[in-house]
Length: 210
Image (cartoon, rainbow, N blue to C red):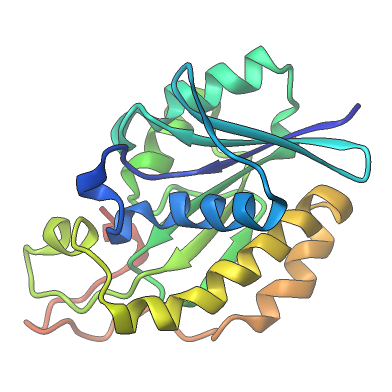
């Protein structure tokens, strides 16, 4: 049976539950809810399993905290003997507007600490789905922004993207990264990263992601 590992990045603990940095967790929670499956506390993370048309899908929310996400990813890839081409990592992204998204087959970590640690351990040749959280923060306040909680209005704007992300995961498993990129990336807002100016006039680029 073909196996797939879908990883949502975030931090464990109630204090992080509704924060922007936990958007990856939120995507996997939405997928698990839609699939009527529940997470169990396993080694290095909360894990849930399901099948999609004969393919085994393992959902992983690492409990290593964001900066050590690679430990969980590498462990579960090795434990389940999953090819890296069947790994999809979901993360937040300050370089995209709230609710926008971008699916890529590989690439740099964009300065994201979770993606950065994964890259250190397994390289950058893996698929990733980045969910935009916006960057409406003054200079020097990026950590507070990503660890800040979504407002109710923010969640209303984000929810359709969370729902769409569950479709993207299913398509990744059934059709592969290439077809899924072609089908879904065109649905993104396709806005340039909000690199023009922040509240203090600082330029923000993907490479400055926390």
